[in-house]
Amino acid sequence: MAATATLSGKFQISIPKAIRDEQHWVAGQEFVFVPKATGVLLIPVPKLGELAGIAKGANPADFRDQQDRY
Image (cartoon, rainbow, N blue to C red; front, side, top):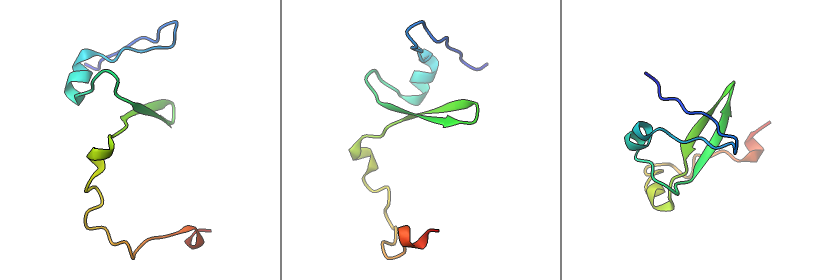
């Protein structure tokens, strides 16, 4: 069964504990809200150290710039 939450009068939502534990989310963590159709994606913002090596093996010579776009 899907976890649910209710928007409070102060426009706050508590994320259910089962979801927090499963995703390893902690208090003070920053999130971004991405509108999608009739809903919203809630995505944690990674810390700088978590991004190290994310582009390993990328070819810097094969990129597009604004001149390549219409």
